[in-house]
Length: 372
Image 1 (tube, rainbow, N blue to C red):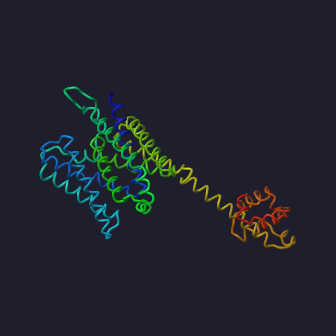
Image 2: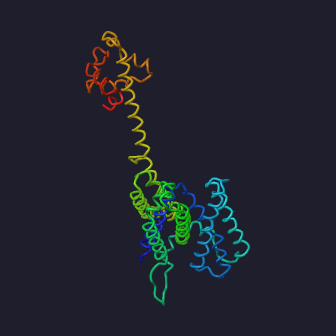
Image 3: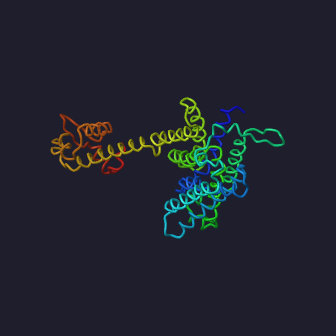
């Protein structure tokens, strides 16, 4: 397998697996826990080395996984004490464990190449060089097997516990009332997140893992209100970010993992601005429509309050500018819309309510008319 394909596939598998479980972290407002785990596992790697005197992948993976799961339990224990909020618990646990790892490296492993920068940033560009050799035969890059296995494991977990994860994420009280254990589901999810983070960052570094845990699911959250669609969109964005990030890194000669995380950020910005449901542009348009609707509604009420035709015929758009403090263009837009619907008439710059407008007001009310 050539290097570019190995790098892109490794990044895509890591991104997809992280987004798969990260979707539930975003829904449960626990997105920062992945960041905590990725930093807190350093002492597990050092302890595994001290016991085995080896930097082989499997012992390091086991040690890091144990500490990752312990991080989850410590955070949850502090949170359940009701003395600290969850974000505060995370902020207490992961700096302490990461600092412990740095101390262990400096005291016990100072002569051994345990690079904290490698743990944090990884080097996905070299993933094609580490091949899995079995019986003297190469089975391909180790990163593909590891990240592919993690992806399969996460997929099977979500498929097996989809209903429970959905219930606990949206309504834990309902889940408890029908016999599910929200706490058990929580610990299962956190254990899977720990394994995913630890198994992935060996190949790509924790920075990319954290980005893919949070950014694609956050973008998908803006684009869909359905859980299954949100999961699929998050995975699609994650995979696209990996491919786009590699192309960007090649074009400007920069960090591949950083470019992939940056690409995910660009996808999030696109969703943030252009989402038809929650995007910034959609919200601006909605606010503008609400303002225009309110303008027409108040204009109808104001015309209705002027009982006689003689009074109505004295009303001019300039009077509304003074009365409501609106711009003339805003008033003109409302007048054009109401005239087109036959609810008001104007002549010589004066406005009045038509018989159809009066009848419609009495029959339907201004809340309905404002949509016209």
